[in-house]
Image (cartoon, rainbow, N blue to C red; front, top):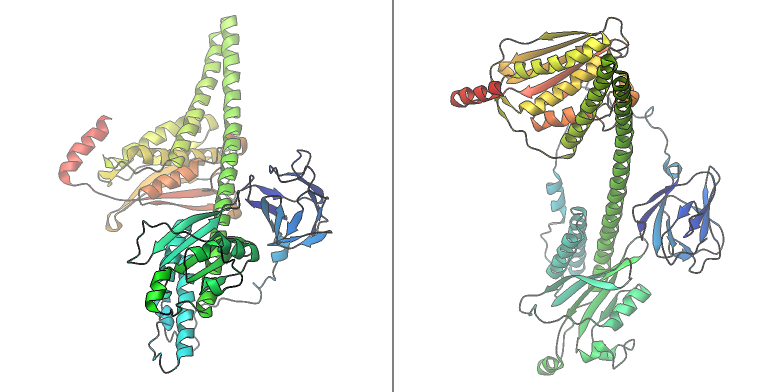
Length: 570
């Protein structure tokens, strides 16, 4: 389904999926796509989706509608990746249909190794670091000055590309870019400024001075230059301000006595996101003393700075887009969490309400059996809400296990006793086979108890529809591998092969309204915190086998005596 994603503006992070038909876009609530932007008209534009393609048309709005930076006068078709500007809001159009590609699975085959004579042989392997040495040149600059400059510029762009690809932090990125510029260009001072997304004014983000120039001195940047660069989207080089006819003789650049400056726009895919400015500060008195001045900046420096600024701008845009996507994902996750929790809490409250009604009815009729029945309902649902809260706390909070010496068979045995009640209700046979050779091990008893309880409860519930339902829980010890396993087997409904990869996904449950979709993700999280894991094999209609693996950490003798006594006592 095509969509519009807001990556800049008041509604940043919002995602609008486009259904077939004509969809209004504007500030009014009646629009299918409401934009909370004072620069947007009440009925600003409309999007028409005919099931194949999307078209946008402006509705005679005050500030107009722009597609990829150009104002649209009539209906235009949208393509995936197009940027739509409505007022001060920027939206990215995405159409999965535009990216549909040919299925090549039948035309490309990954073959298994055959006989040695038929197999391919790796002749040479090379790391990325070795490959990058292609740009570490050793050459005689005097032999070919042009080739030397070309190689040097290529190395500059390569290192710039590496810098922008290794960070998503804008401040860190800009500092790195400015550092590289000072390595390549003989600038005395430099600054990078970004356009504020709301006010559209330039705000300084990074400043750098070459050694020997005081950082306490203010860097006064000519507004004449900045306005020209942003307004014309052109980089400028001034080698002598008094001879440049574009600048007024009374302008700030002349009064400051700056002999050379380069200012380039940070042009991204769609817009200018900022500027990079460098200069050499030479006072008029210094020029007189030198009786002449040799320019440090050339057209080649200007071209190089424009290329660097473009790379930096692309990285800034990607970072902003990534931040917006992360915000959208967080909002979607919060919404999903609230919806799922509300659903489960509502079901639990209905159970408590039903039990309370029975208690009230039994008290009125002085019928102890009805009161007991109602209390059992209330108690069962209190257990459900307690388990839900504990699962949410376990999953949402990063925690380190609290390992102490303990008896694993004792912990699993306690789980078996708890699950027996549920198994008896469903008439499911429950068998417990502890391994007798398991020594005292170091683990987090509370965490392992919860993980095994979640898996065992699921196994019993999976046998609910089976007339001969059976669950077998066992422990196994492998001293040579320093491994212990807790195996939970059932002959219940089994898991569809397509669902096996999803069972550890949050809020995915095969129990319908009875499950929270938290049990297995919580169990997996606990096991990974212990350095273990959960493995699952299942056949639909025949049952499942969950194998919980833990490192078998045997404590020292002194700790074992103290820890085991504390565990058994608790």
